Image (tube, rainbow, N blue to C red):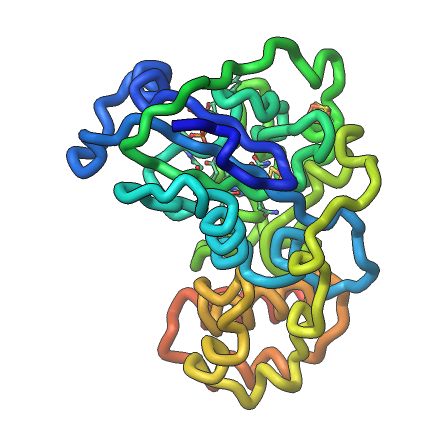
Length: 298
Ligand code: B12
Ligand code: SF4
Ligand code: SF4
């Protein structure tokens, strides 16, 4: 199969599936036993920090990147006329950063993310796994983008980054996408969903904004407490069906907004109690609000 048939305005690379498995020292799932190649694509998010105290990280500014990237890849590979393939974006057993590295799309930085020379680290990765064999495969690039720089390690408010990589239990992006009860770590939260602190300080992201139009901020990235007051899970899922933060559901998102409001001392105890009473059967939520009430008194 000829790689020239792939049409993408953004970088992509192709690797042999077997070589990837050897690199990560794993066998791979049975369902992929006939697969031969991985085509790895990257697409840029916006890197412009929009002012606002209650906004998600940039990967969640615009349309849900899982849906968008899948559509873009479907279009990029249509001339290949693949018969046996799957498009994977985020939700897969493939180690996407490692795939992108092996495909020559960049190097992994101390912030634990893939950094592309032109587009920086504000990028989404999407992968096609297929049984097709290609006329040419890519190789990783050599080098070290970070060298003596430690900006991301120093900037991480919860010390989640170190020379050993990322400790996800301390990472705000992990915490605010889960029902974690490590309340203390939430005190340092700056983004409503996800976290960009270690990318904001990275010199490789101080570039022009290449973000796809569909990833630019839209009005649904602005959540209001008033609106959340009257919403339920069903309405939340419906309204935000095209947003990246849809999957975490209503209550974790309410928790995130309340945490930020308390961090900014921008809420009353009465408002906290309203949500606590409304969702008192959810213990993880109830207890977190109890913590936030105490914090507000400090
Ligand atoms: C689980 C997950 C998370 C978790 C936990 C991450 C973790 N590392 O434990 C949490 C919720 C914290 C998270 C956060 C974020 N995530 Co995330 N996440 C994933 C997911 C689903 C799996 C990652 C994982 O744990 N893989 C297993 C590990 C073992 O493999 P790995 O990821 O390839 O990591 C290996 C390499 O980094 C390698 N490695 C380390 N150093 C070096 C050096 C070299 C030279 C090489 C070759 C390898 C190497 O060692 C690691 C371990 O084997 C991937 C999608 C996917 N399926 O891969 C997205 C993904 C990694 N996330 C992504 C994004 C955008 C984010 C956030 C930026 C979102 C945000 N703004 O909040 C943050 C960034 C936090 C950070 N500083 O890393 C993007 C990364 C894009 C990029 N530029 O790299 C991915 C690829 C999703 C996508 N399709 O675009 N994420
Ligand atoms: S995403 Fe935030 S909390 Fe996680 S490592 Fe980066 S700066 Fe630290
Ligand atoms: S901030 Fe510095 S150390 Fe961290 S990923 Fe960027 S270049 Fe590497």
